Image 1: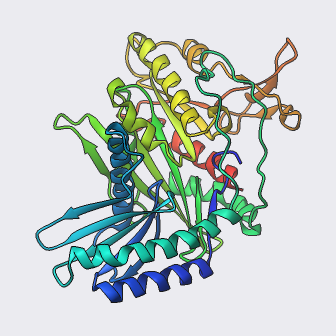
Image 2: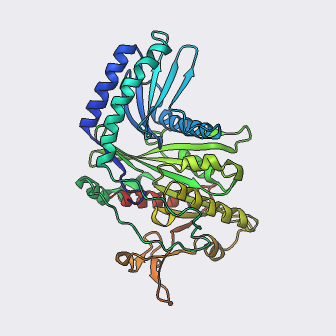
Length: 189
Length: 225
């Protein structure tokens, strides 16, 4: 699959299953809300209280936070940090890796405790991981690694064979093409 | 790595502005932020140092609108251009759908441009991406400066092109952004050759900023389909 092709899709069934699991977790812990963010910084779902902040910006910063901490983990000889905790005076957040592709962010205040959130988190992360694995399985495989040490086209053209998309696309995506160029011209004119 | 969310009926795509330090990547995003209606764009998030050099990234979400009932959103990112922030640059490329390389046209930035282009290719390779297969455009910025190199020289260094080996793509392809020119063509030596679309810009005044963004956006949407 070439980068740029759809790498995963998220259906209504996925949304219901994930929302159900996270709602159960929020009830058990008393946490306010939870967000699911993919590792590229895109917001996948919000469950519980609707956030009063800019959730799109929040998702982008969450992914950056998690990625930066991954690198810190490697510097000290760890593979990664699977959870992160940020404590505030009133609001705190707990971040957990889900299947290495998604981040679960739990927002909670002093109506619950870090211990309870941490205790119940493992169960919901396992449930979500199982669901997301199914999502990824039906999505195209990630692209094969390019040759290490490859040279930029600016210096030497790569001339590698072109790899066509491997998975069929939802029918609406090809329809999307018809109007997209005009939409882009209107938006940026 | 675009994401199609059928539940919230959204398509999200990630576009990264790459290039040498002080080349104008953040200026591109700031101009877009100023010009696009507040109803169609989100906050401009800048993780910068006290002297306004990008430390981690700038981020600007822009809504394309609703197409066939799906809200389509572009997430625009810049990377820090300074050489020693490479770990940050590599992280931002994760899940990228399209790349804009913002080159500094000034003659004395020649080496910085080349180094940054090589760095882009290397960092993409580490994520398993090949720049020649990604939606990719090159912007020659700072065209207003007196010591700007000519476009032909910049092309030779930063956009020499690459061979097209897939037989299905070995046919002349017009440059949709510059009528009369080809992006894929057959060389006199017989090879089929492809180049990235290029745009001249003066990002500080906005010239060329939207031409660049429109082009990479269209290429990204076509890649999804």
